[in-house]
Amino acid sequence: MSRFSEMGRRLHQGEIAFDFVGRRRLWYRISVLILLAALAGLGVRGLHLGIEFQGGTVYTLAKPGLTVSQAQGAVDGIAGGAGPLVQSTGDGRIRIQMSSAEEVPAAEFTGALSSRLDVPKDSIDVQMIGPSWGKQISERALLGLFAFLALVTVYLAVAFEWRMAAAALAALLHDVFITVGLYALVGFEVTPGTVIGFLTILGYSLYDTVVVFDGVKDKAKGITRQTRMTFGEAANQALNQTLVRSLNTTVVALLPVAALLFVGGGLLGAGSLNDISLALFLGLATGAYSSICVATPLLAQLKERQPEMKQLASRVAKQRARAEAAAAPALAG
Image (cartoon, rainbow, N blue to C red; front, side, top):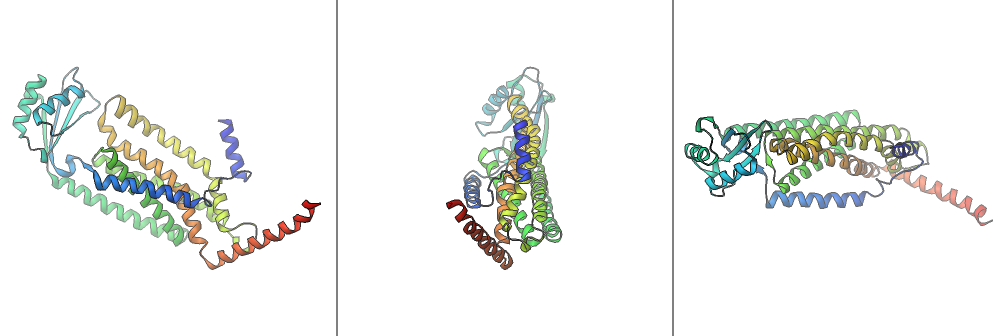
């Protein structure tokens, strides 16, 4: 831990630095590969929508000692391999979700389930959900997403400038596409909890990016009046100064989410926790990556296209050439 703190001090003081901006082509290639894998997941497998979005029936029952695998075996025997989702709710009950496409009459399914699992028929709670409810959720979630993106773009354009707004928005969309695509690849069910997770990660990803951009803004003040560094180098220095803070924030945020996903959902079998925890885990990881390796390098690329920044880069190069020429005789001697 002391070594990590020492590295953070040296990064902040500029004694060491990682060239994130200079290696932007590498980060872009990595992002393109991940995006292609995510898009392939969406195209080939698609999203596994829960019954809240496509309609269906939820059966909930409780029996001491009943495991998810035992319930799954009984359900598969009734549904004929149709694939209803069986989960533990975490409070000793078993939740069975059957979409409307699987079309097993509720009365028939309840009777067969009662017989196979040896539970009273009237103890099985049956809840039928229509697809219109899920449609309303989807429409409102998309409306909220578009409103959020519009407000974020306006705020960043006013508080910083349009190039920062464009870079932050690109990083945000990068996180959304990757998270949704990887969700499709993993095959987890998309529920309202998943939607909440998706919307939550947008705020976190944006927060991390704005912290870095605020440092870049301070570093770039009056940058055209000097010849020591280019805008890209100033942005990279600001990124390195906030690097440890970004990593610490990400790790602290990922630890409880990982506990929900791997311990709660994996080891303990509380499958309902997977809905939101996987979306949060993927979103937090991609958000940290994009704020460091996508947003800031993209911002530097956009800024360096400005005429004044091109002139600055030319003056910096000439100044360094003169310094090297002046130092050459001394080194030769």
